[in-house]
Image (cartoon, rainbow, N blue to C red; front, side):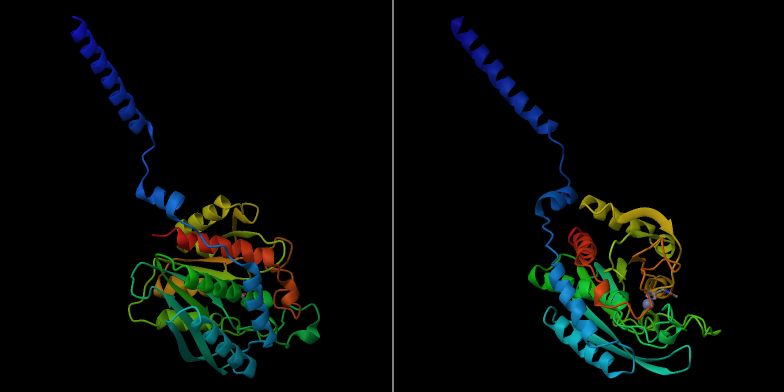
Length: 335
Ligand code: AHN
Ligand code: ZN
């Protein structure tokens, strides 16, 4: 009797232990591999804004990077040699295009690839040329003066070079192509309107028709334009929303997730003609534009847009950090 009782008690206890253990297991939230990657494995590098700022400063020191000038040529050499220190796959795509005024411009799209063999890739881009005319300057006498383009041009490129540096230290899982487009900003001046269509973004139009690799594709693209100004807000620009609403949502949510909700607003604003338009239309890679929106200016761009004051003083390191850290997080959260 006593023996049976003992065995019974042991059975009951062990059944209880087994039950509570298995209950414990089922109570735990199942962790999908995607979650595990995001919460445990994924370490996103720290974007260094001082480093990005130096890359912006260096570009501006060449002077205005206007196509067919020496400063433009020198800056191209600098960008190529800098990117070569971070990637063994750097290509220069040379091309000639006709501007709105029939001038022939010598352009160079500069491309740095990471994990070039994988088909699972994303595209990050910005334009590296600067505008030949400060045609929105309050002083009409400056309308023919070329601009430094510290924010309009150099800021996006500075962020992308810092991202390339981070990739060289800690390679991402996904393939990435960084493309620095040329001849974005040689469009018709506001006091010389022509009937020539599509006269902006000539470098990205060229690349979209002649990608650096035959049958090139990417899952999606992110364009950075004017990402260094003070007091920035980035809104849901309509061209991006038309062609790539899911990417927009993903990027904005990640920005909120890492603490930048005050800068990335879920507010729709007007459609822009920018490099992403042609990438969407011609090569059909869904591409968004992260571009500062300022409700207080006529242009809705930053205050010194296309003026002689778009110089290094326009650049806030904090803004470079906000955008750079967001884009880095997007890349490292991809599988
Ligand atoms: C136009 O003004 C046509 N597009 C804005 C794109 C741009 C100019 N981005 C920088 N400069
Ligand atoms: Zn511009």
